[in-house]
Amino acid sequence: MSDRIALIDDEALFRETLAWNLEDAGFSVDAYAEAEEALRRIDGGQAYHAILLDWQMPVMNGLEFLKVLRQKGHHVPVIFLTGLQEPIYEERGLAEGAIDYIEKTRSVSVILHRLRLAIGGAKVATAETPPAGLALDSTSARAEWRGRRVDLTLSEFRVVMLLAEREGKDVSYREIYNAVKGEGFIAGAGIEGYRANVRALVKRIRQKFKDVDPDFTALENYPGFGYRWRPESGA
Image (cartoon, rainbow, N blue to C red; front, side, top):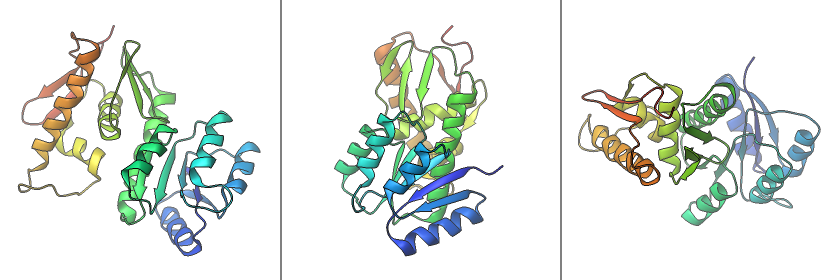
């Protein structure tokens, strides 16, 4: 059975075009021109694996919809898909419980990649036992280590979620970079330029975990290949 997506956007051409692309990629899509209609359907029992949400809409805007959705206890992953590019909107959306924030100018392939990451992360969080000591909330992109909050950025959270999902297995530099930038994204400094970016990213992640637990050793390096989340690390 395909994953079901709610697409909420009052711009008809964009909504219809993206819905076609999502369906071509194997998703089932319910497209809504108004946030109120989508909320009524969800309250009526319609379940979604993820919601793609515009911000600027009449009557009930995207942020208002998200706040009501969370207040009602619905924890489906929500991704803002909007033309608002200022960082203040992204920060506000994530603070209110969105899992991601994507500009409408991004390609369909990037949107699909980020959507699959959100759905995959939610399934990991609900269907599998996370590594010992680690707690991940995919709906808010928040992490805890041994009961203490770890203040990760969204990109850092994606990396931790990927490593946790593959606990005990080596994850390559390229896979980690794809989780942050999208598959096929070309970094600077030549074809291997992404490695330096991944090393710097993982270094920041490791330090944030050490800030809450100086004895943290779960995040291991596999020289020349990538990283792994060590099993039984928090037991």
